[in-house]
Length: 257
Ligand code: IPE
Ligand code: IPE
Ligand code: MG
Image (cartoon, rainbow, N blue to C red; front, side, top):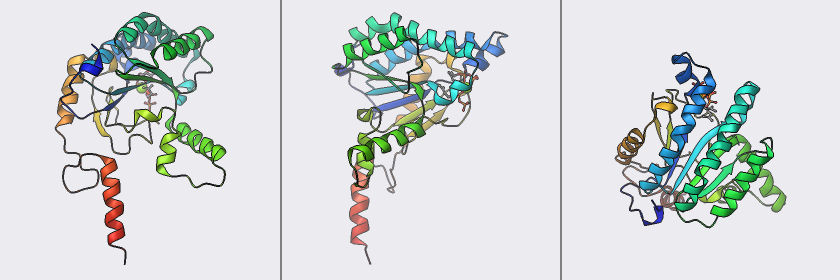
């Protein structure tokens, strides 16, 4: 479905997912960890389609962290191969559904064929106005902030860095703040994902391991979280963080002693 024609019944614009639990899912079934990755990779396209149907503006999926480089080479190779397979299998659907596709992170060590596929798909979809689908691959949140800071300093020698300026130097600035961060697999941690962007995110942790995650559970989570009261520092429901930042500045000025 074309997202630009979808009416969303929720205010969750940017949803991020830590797709975790593949290895344990496989171990529980007496399989090798990589089998969990194979099965998990089959879930991704369904969730992308559902996010599009639900009128979500941006979906950012954690596929490989900077820390995941410490895993055995054989496992890393399978993850590379699954990314490649996804790109081949899903590119037509991404094109047809007006989805803008990007990868964020350091992909310099990926095979050249995969890098070419990514570059091609990013160019082909860059003008798309539907769901902003981003895979975080070779991604680390601390690294993104340090890189943004260094690039700002390079381009603005002697100038002071502001929050707004740093936002502009993030890897994909127009994704904006995360409204909802979902982590599957039962662990309740952030594992270096989107550290800047989750400042006011709602968190949802599910025991479900990624290969068992369904579109129904995804929709249930969206519905549940949509009813949460988001206050952004105020005493009652607030519309968004930007308004409250302005209001807070104003109030602080008024109270200056
Ligand atoms: C998530 O599943 C996929 C990646 C981190 C690449 P895991 O491989 O971390 O699975 P568990 O957490 O060990 O079960
Ligand atoms: C986070 O999962 C990274 C991805 C899902 C890609 P990990 O399994 O690597 O996280 P930790 O090691 O449990 O924190
Ligand atoms: Mg894990």
